[in-house]
Amino acid sequence: MRGGTVAILLLIVFLVARDLRTSRLSRYSALLFLGTAAFVIDSAPGFWTLDMRLKIPIHVLCIATPAVFWIMAAALFDDDFKARWYHALAWLWLAGLAWREMYGWPSAVVAVQEASSLLFVAFGVWHALAGRAGDLVEWRRQLRVEFAVITALYIASIIVSQRIWPGTLGKPPYSLFNAIGLMAFIFVYAWLRLSLLISQQFAPASPQDGSAPLIGAGPRQAPSATGQDAVVLEALRKLMVEGKAYRDDGLSITLLSQTLGVQEYRLRRLINGQLGHRNFSAFVNGYRLTEAETALADPGQAEVPILTIALDAGFGSIGPFNRAFKAHTGLTPTEYRRTRVDAPLPIPESASRS
Image 1 (cartoon, helix red, strand yellow):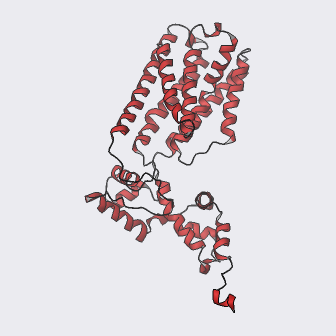
Image 2 (tube, helix red, strand yellow; image 1 turned 120 degrees about the horizontal axis):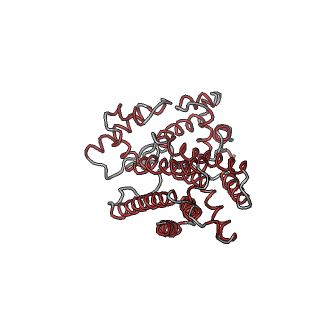
Image 3 (cartoon, helix red, strand yellow; image 1 turned 90 degrees about the vertical axis):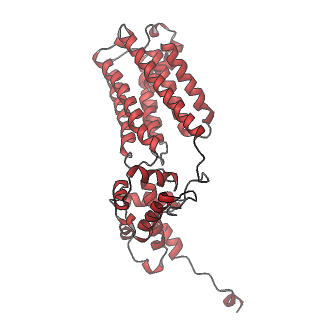
């Protein structure tokens, strides 16, 4: 069973490895599945009889898996995720503790390793659940609970059981139960992954050109939207553009669906499938940033505080506004206003000739 589990995991690694150069998520996924395969071997009876040159890399990959789980969950569920130095530090921290464990098992080192692992798993769960309400990609919303949380619970249960019953994972009958659980879990995941690939392969072509929407451009009605979908999209456009519903800093997909009188799942599908937005915050912030840009470029509002402009546009505080604006324009609000309002006016051609 362990051999079959490792074979499935390595097959998944091989499949995702095709996109290693172009997809950071593929890199994190490959590392996570390698770490899981390492755990399957690490927890097997007789592992500690292997040569040290084999044990060290396998054990390091195994113990560092919670940090990889955190990074992968962040990359999968947060569209704006960028790996930071502390993500690499988390992996190196667990890898260093794993290396130290290979030369003895001081109780303090083991306790620190277990506590750190549980902390990183908790970070991964937070990424999975924090943005679920605004996630517009339906399969990803389901995956947040069905996969991420289940994976986290499994990792946490392994860590806790090792603390309560040290060394039992490699002894019968616990080793057998663990092997059965691993085989079943990985088989179900592989089946779900294959089902998703097949559904994508045979799904009808998207009516869009495949390009990501420009933030701040507002919703764009896809040509294929007909019938009731077209009616809902037009009502949504009027509510956002003419009614300026985005100015409400508490606006949610639930409130918006109630206002429009449509089912929430249907509105999610339209905003994602027809307008191209992957999360609700990006959809709403597009309108807010457009209004803020217009206000900051208006000489008549040059004395209006930036905080006032941000609050009027619907942002709850200045911090999120500054980050979103900088990510959108590449400039801070102050820099943007300076380039638009304080820029010298061009000299008319007739005046230059005179």
